[in-house]
Image 1: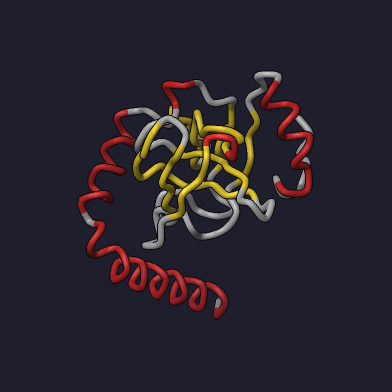
Image 2: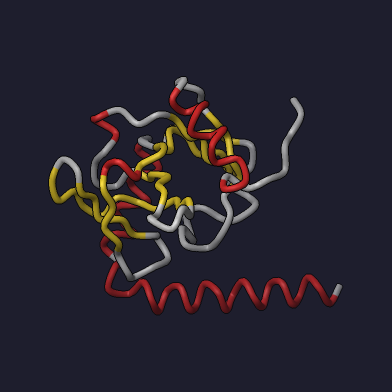
Length: 158
């Protein structure tokens, strides 16, 4: 299969059309807001049209901000049927979105060639542990990024 190297934003309209037609679209994760669970340029998420039972706490959604930017974050809580509080796993700031802003839901995650359902017990367990560590996330993420910088620096020296 041929691969197209572009961002979701660059093909936003096509993504909307394909999702509406019930296609499942694979995309490499880009950015660091979902670290340490989704790593930029390593992990692949499979996006699909969201069903009503997909829109719940803990699910990872692709949504469009009011400025048009497409963002992949996790549902922290559902305020009512049409308002969702979103949070990136590496972030401490939440944002509210309307149901109309939701583009897709992550159905599967591929890491190092292994594909798992996003709702698998594996991912649910990891997220439950991460959720318990919420007060410590800023410290954990500072350590995480320092370790990654050291690893990159060491790789560059060889």
